[in-house]
Length: 218
Ligand SMILES: C[S@@+](CC[C@H](N)C(=O)[O-])C[C@H]1O[C@@H](n2cnc3c(N)ncnc32)[C@H](O)[C@@H]1O
Image 1 (cartoon, rainbow, N blue to C red):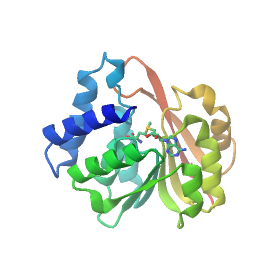
Image 2: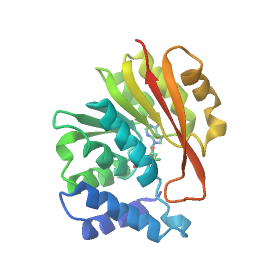
Image 3: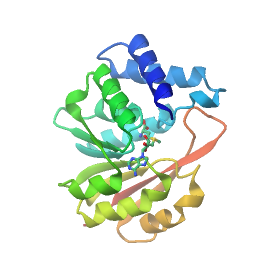
């Protein structure tokens, strides 16, 4: 998405959402996307409300404290995740696009969640080896062809532990790219993995799915 389009969303959110109210920030982004539902130029690749509910429920269910996100975009999922973290929780969100990092930081600031979120500019494959301490929850939502290689890198660098939840978005829409990813999380004895049917964000008529894989041993 071009810088101009991302800046237009930011402007809309700053004008129309209630500062310090994360739900208002998310609702405002959703309205912006839905008002332009027939306008492909206005399509926003956020996790969106339907898959976002799955994300929220899992974070609450697993009481996840330390969360990693691959792919920040405009910070929609960062707000959604951070607003459901306990006060001692934290989210690290990685994206190589400088404009994404800038816009996402401002959106998170509008939700008054800055203290819960650290954005790191860089490609996941470059940033992952520099991180330490395993994560409770990893939201994979970046380059679709990199899901498997980056998950393997996360495993090799010790960032995945027993009970880590891996939530992979868009595995229905991009299922052709996911064959090896599915084999990795479904056919090994390391994960308990489930596929949940859903829809593409803001498009009720387009199939999508998420893969939720819980690591069952170190
Ligand atoms: C689908 S969007 C993320 C949406 C966001 N998680 C949400 O739901 O609000 C994908 C993002 O991944 C980023 N991205 C692309 N390649 C990446 C990589 N190698 N490492 C990390 N992020 C990447 C893009 O810049 C883009 O902002």
